Structures are given as structure tokens and as C-alpha cells.
Image (tube, rainbow, N blue to C red; front, top):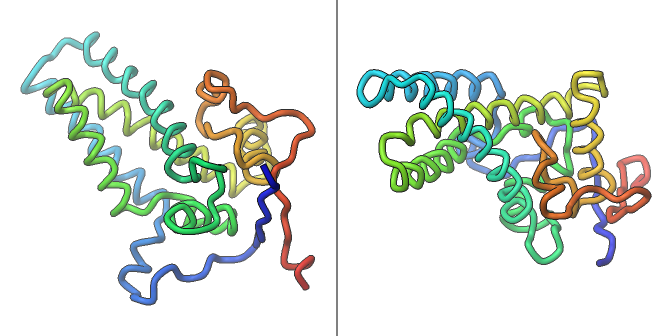
Length: 219
């Protein structure tokens, strides 16, 4: 595989994706908005299931953490096979660029560190529909764990790109930045490296698949 050449603008805002100001507005989101929205949805789902379906606390706790575990797998699969091209893990054109490549190119643009609300809700709705088709009302519990795990992932990812490495985020910071700046076909897990271990995509020492060019080098 040839090295992927990518221009990185580490201290700049990303350009507009749409000429229409309303569409462009929907492409940028602050994590507080998503945090509040999904915490409300999570609590509502748990309360609804508890009051109208089953008040067994152990069952609810078990289903919740099963949903958390399921998110780690979904996160890995979407990052590897949806946000990167299946053939070569590139991300610099087409659908992949709009949803993910722009983040690789402008990695510190905080308005693009979080999946915007509209596509996020659409994807969440698809997942919930699938869960409900498989497990009925128990999907309210399972999906609550899934959403909370997504929130955790989102906040980890946001802090990785907005802060210097610290004790709290040191492992995640190193793992994810390897994916960004050294090996674009490895380290697809953000909140957990579990599935990178399982599917053999943990980073390899002294390996590089990306050639980075910064504005200073371009000038």
C-alpha cells in the first residue's frame, strides 16, 4: 500500500462543506448539545422501560452494560468500514471526506470533532429500529447503554484533540494520534482498543502509512 499523502491544517477552522448556510450550520456541533440530548434520551428510555415493562433492576443493569459493550464494536466497525474506504482505509474523497476526512485534515476544529446532531440522530434511529426489531421493548434499556457509551466516546475524542496528553487521556491520546498521524489503517478504536486487538489492527512500532504536509511546508 502506498503511503497516503494528506495536507494537515492543525490550527485552522475547516472550510464550508455546503454553500447553503442552513445546511452548513447542521454540519457543526458542540459536544454539550449532543451530551444534553442523549442523556435526556437515555434517562427517558430507562424510566419508560422500568415503569411500563419490567422493574427488575438487575435485568436493566445487565442490559445497559450489554449496550455499552455493543457500542465499542459499532464504533470500531463504523470507523473502519464506513468512515474509511474499505479498499485502502483512505478518507480524502467522496462520502468519507465529508463525514471524516475533513476531521483528519483539520484535526483541532472543535466544531467538527462531534458528529452533527441531524446525522447522529438518523444513525441512532436506525440502530434503535434494529434493536427494537430484535429485542422488542428491551431495546429501550440496551439502547440507553449504547447511547451512554457513545457519549463517553464522543467526549474522549473531543478531549484528545483539544488537550495535550495528560494522565487521564494519555493512552487514548497516543492510540488515536497514531491513527491520525502515522498509521491511517490501524487504531480504529477510540474509546477502547479491544476490537483493534481482536481484528489485528493495533499499531505497529516504527510503521508509517501517512505522509503529512503542513501549511509551512506547502509555503
